[in-house]
Image 1: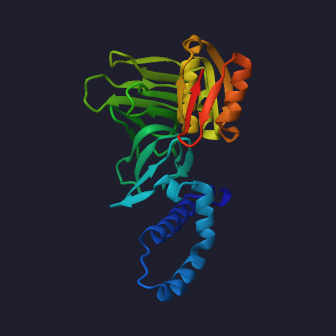
Image 2 (image 1 turned 90 degrees about the vertical axis):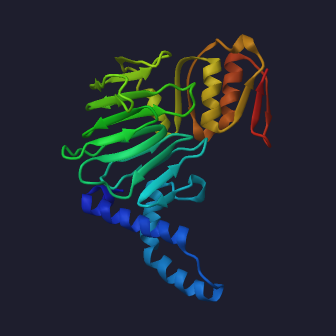
Length: 287
């Protein structure tokens, strides 16, 4: 990590080595086992150290993350219950939340740096005043030069579009042109309301972005909202059979590594409920 972040040249070299490794994993089609073994062994040993670094840095090119390359565009699909981190060719750092899809080019053009996001992403953009960085979402575009911000744009209509600015400046515009562009400054966020308009407000809760570090932080949410977040965070289906619990207010932090059973057991002691866990079908019923 220190070597890669030391210079743009190092980052570019790592990117090329990563693409080499990815191409080998995806496109190597030996004709016979006898022919394949010496070839694969020679090539893999040649890029083994670089591939190891790439795996550690990006943590997303295993089969479970469904990484694909098509016509110079890379596609990352993060399964439910998982998160991942990557560094783009310009040095921009990106964290992707559960159930997120990111499309980005292997190298950026000469006018703009553009990516497309479906889900939730946290961006630490490498500053380049000559090449604006644009995040395209289903309804809105978020444009920056160099800043840190979080974007929520799931296909699920129950989760509204939201952009939170941690530092710098971003401009949010509608691809349909129906709404005026909004410029956010430090510690502001904008969220889509029920009528489709965007509402801006001060940003005070920075713990909500702890998901990128494997921590789910919830502040004064209802129990119904909490179990909805648990479902996405731990990749389970949770059904609430006790309506008396629905509006209970909850605040807490939950580590992904602790697992859903540990988190539910903590809540069980604090709130008081019983639950059944059908492990085979990843279904939890709270009574």
